[in-house]
Amino acid sequence: MPLDLEMLRTAFPGRKIVWLDTCESTMTEGARLAREGCPSGTVVIAEEQSAGQGRYRRQWHSERESGLYVSIVLRLGLPVESARVLSMALGLAVGETIARAADVRCDLRWPNDVLIGDKKCAGILVQVEGDSLIAGIGVNVNHESLPPELEVKATSLRVACGRPVSREMLLLHLLGTVDSFARMLAEGGREPVLKMFARNSTCVSGKRVTVEQGGKLIEGVTDGLDPSGFLYLKKPDGTRITILAGGVRPVRDAN
Ligand code: BTN
Image (cartoon, rainbow, N blue to C red; front, side, top):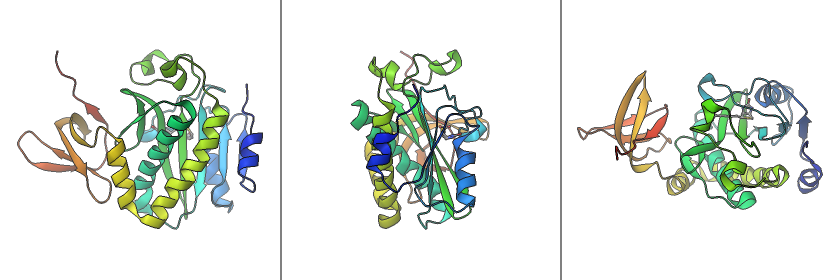
């Protein structure tokens, strides 16, 4: 069934909410609206995306009427360098949304994957468009299964909880939590967001991980976040390096 947005429109009167039956990507729609001067907080929601964008130019699987595919145009007066910490704030917002609306506890994998157990259930993409940041959020909600190439590393709320979850309730909580975490960053700066991220992620400190860097895998133990939100990694030789980007994966014990 398509989304019923009546509750959302009532809870957020005056908010520009654009619903699309289908589109290539809500990111391009959000960027277009931002260029046209739409108000900050404008939300674009699609039932499906034919070219959903993930990080690192990956495709985001966007099954019709199963997930949440949302982009929010934010004009927070933040410098472009804050996009990374905003994406971490959005990870916190999505984790809190899922806890409230679906009663499931999520983990956060640096920089912004939202996990249930060790499987990803939501992803975040932030793009800069002029003076706006476009916050893209994809949540696997009611997918009964995921394509074979994804199911080893991804899940949906329905698969994880064994019951369907209301996309309307998720959206309702999502807009509220995104507003409050964006405010936390705009008013309080990076520090409170990074502290909260570290508290809500099992991967930020003391976790043995491999990180992909320039096509090579580096192994080490995570050692906290630097003031810009980059990840410190302690290598087996004792040196500490800063990870600027790249997939962080836990090292599984051999037995
Ligand atoms: C990731 O790779 O983890 C980020 C995925 C972001 C997906 C969302 S779905 C809504 C918005 N529109 C897109 O095309 N991508 C983002």
